[in-house]
Every structure is written in structure tokens, then in C-alpha cells.
Amino acid sequence: MRQTFLPFAQPDLDGSEIERVVEVLRGGWLTTGPRTRELETQFAGFVGSRYAVAVNSCTAAMHLALEAVGVGPGTEVITSPYTFAATAAVIQHLGGAPVFADVLPDTLTIGPSGVEAVLSARTKAIVPIHLAGHPAEMEPLLSLAADRGLAVVEDSAHAFPTKYRDKLVGSFLGTPEQIGRVPSASCFSFYSTKTITTGEGGMICTDDEELADRCRLMSLHGMSRNAWARYTQHGSWFYEIEDAGFKCNMTDVAAAMGLAQLDKAERMHTRRTAIAEAYNEAFKSCSALEIPSVRPNVGHSWHLYQLRLNLERLSIDRDEFIQELGRMNIGTSVHFIPLHIHPYYRRTYGFRPEDFPVAHREYLREISLPIFSSMSEQDVSDVIEAVLEIVEGAEI
Image (cartoon, rainbow, N blue to C red; front, side, top):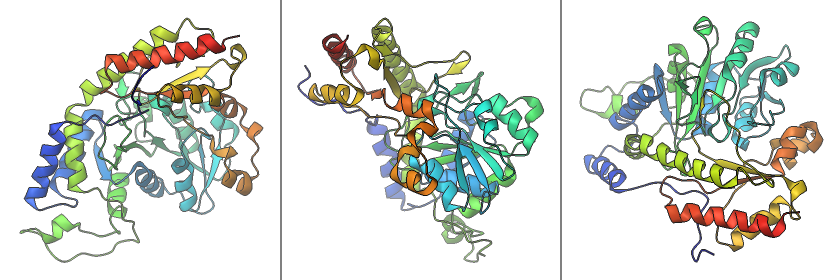
């Protein structure tokens, strides 16, 4: 058994982040400025989008993108119950109502048939979640959106770098015929557990210039000029408030860290993939375990490694399995407690666990194992040995 605790997630940091951040601190410009713009340009180039808007969280990115596509009072937005609270909360903050479609059992993402079943005259947008780093089935969702005049805002918090049919999430994932027919954006997270991090941060990617301009405007109080355009030598003090905006801008300090992380993104993704492959190889023949499903023509980001337990083959439940891993110094998490079983959603909308049976069933048997690019081979072996030891002692 391990002698030290292995966390579920940990950022991969080295001297490059320190150097970049110190450079910004010494330069004296800390808030939104040239480093933020550089990160936007580089990130857009990496994923293949025309525009990128850096903000202070993926929650802010979702809020801004949904506001930009017209979500407001009296509208509905279809999304997944199998997600983090922020996905649905931003819809409600805009005055809209989240409408849940149950997830597919293999990828735990929403599909076109589930979405179509809950469409109404009030539906304004669809929010697919690329859960764990596996993309939702985007072409049919975009086709449905185009036919019904809906927007699509992707919750891509887990999806860097994720590929769908040879295109990176963040670029337009539909067919050439769908280009220009669907207002769309992809929202990324740079939280400390994500595949690249700025500590806290997010990015909106889109090919829609009007949508990008609206997000940028609303991200900083609805002001016509940001601080860089007002306070530097060739700036102007004058600005106008064009709308009642928010305070969601990224700082150059955070962007500096993001630039260092982006430089290492491919190396870090290669390592995450190797860890996932090691887990798959170790667990694939174990009847008590179900390894993550990866559909053809998909490039998984491996933000999460979601192991599922075949509980009928075990004498313990998921929570007891997690307790045993903790006793063996292996950190874990669960992604996610479905929103519809949380007290707020049960109280507000009258949901019952059985209303979305796939989400509820899969939640009860999911464990997210440690996966981060600075894990050593010994760390990976320790996780595998601990999981298999628990299975050996509890298998029926």
C-alpha cells in the first residue's frame, strides 16, 4: 500500500509558469492586456476557431455565450442532468429554464433523440456537455439545431484537447452545410484540475464575429474600452457603457500561466492518454469493472478517467469502494451527482431520481480515478494495484 496520499488531480507546473508570471509582475501590467490577447490568439489557433474571448471561469464563459445567443426570461435551454451545477445555474441566472434530457449510457452525453423529445416552442438553445473529455455527438445535434432555429453552446470544460471526427472541439464541429446556420460557441475551463490551467479561467471560442464581440463587450461591464485601451500611452480615457455587462475578464497574470501551459499541452495530453491506456489494459478483462467507452472517430482529452463498477458482481457499493481506495491512499472523485437529485432541483422542479434513469443509475456506479500528466509510473501502478486488490476481495 502507498505510504503517501495520491490526489485525484494535480496541476502540472514547472519553472515555465513561474517565469511567465514573474515577467508580467515585473512589467507592472496585471489586468487584462497583451498577455490575455496573446493567449486568445494562440488558443484560437490551437483549436481552429476564428475568435476566442478569455474570461475568468468556464461558468462566466457559459453565462456570456448564452446571453449572446438570446437566452432570457421565458426561454428554455436543453442540457444534461449529468453535469456540474454551473451548466444549469447560468441558464437560470439569465432568467431561462434548464430542461434536462437523459444521457446515453455509453458516453454519458446527450444525444439528438433525447433532445428532440423535450423540445418546445420556448427552446432557445442546446448545451451539450463533452463529459470527461469525450465529445457529444455533435453533427446530429447541430443538424437538429439548424432545422429548429436553435443555438448551440458547448460545455467544453473537460474537452481540451478533444477531437470529434478529426476536428478539435472549439472549432465548428458540424458539416459544411451547417456553417452559418447555427449560432454556436464552445466554452472551456482552465480551473486548477483541468488539462491546462490558469488557476481560475475560461475561454469562449466561436466562428461568429457578432457573438464574440457581444461576449467581449459583456465580459467587462459593457464598456466600449478595456483598461489597456484606456490607461496605456496611446489609449484614451473616454469610454461608453453600451449595455449592463458583467465582470468576467481574465488577468494577464492568469494568461501568462495559460501561455506556459499551452506550450506543454500536447506533451501533457500524451501523458494523460498513456495513463488512460494503462488503466484500460489493467481493467478491461475484469468482469466487475467497466472501462470508459470511446466511440470511433473520437480523440479523448482524458480530463477524467471514469471507471464504472458492475455492482452486481461486487459485495460492496460504490461509496464503500471509494472508502477502500481512500484507506489505501488513493484519491478519487465522482463526476457527477446528477443535478436532478440535488435538493434545489428537487424542490424547485419536483424532480425524482427516476426521472432521468440512465443518469441516476450510472452515477451510482461511477468513480473518477487519479489522472494527471505529472503522475509517475509508480503512481499509476499504485492505482491499478489498489483497484484490483479491492475487486479481488469483494468480487462475487
